[in-house]
Length: 180
Image (cartoon, rainbow, N blue to C red; front, side, top):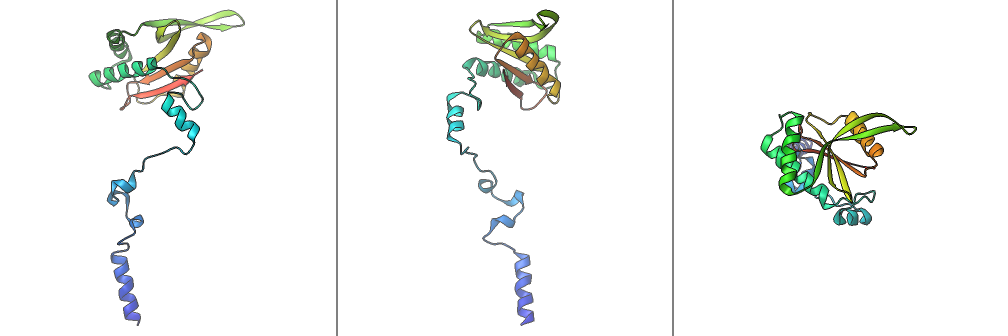
């Protein structure tokens, strides 16, 4: 009896799960089981995602999608190892080719108690009077918290609604949308 029990345990240890895949380590589990499609259970967020609105209700127009398409084209052609000014020049050409109006190195005044303390320069102001998007470009391995703070300063002091923070040093392209 002990021998039979020992033999069953030995076989179970040798092949612990024929039908149960949960005991297999991740490289051996079929991809259908490993990667499941994420579906948000919240119907309001699903509706927002399909209509072009953020979770907070901000509208992201086609302009921001066109800008990001131009940024992706620039990174595909130049790669990740150029300097920030090179990406700015190439992006100016890409935006012009797409027919998107832009201004480069626009000064935004920093105001305290009605007095201009200093002026900061944002890389791009893209769009026309009705709809303008700020674009701040970085060429680093990661986006730093100071970069977020810089974009927030531009949004608040310049009274803009949307800033795109794009990092060409990341693969894939590092994109952050910051809304005011």
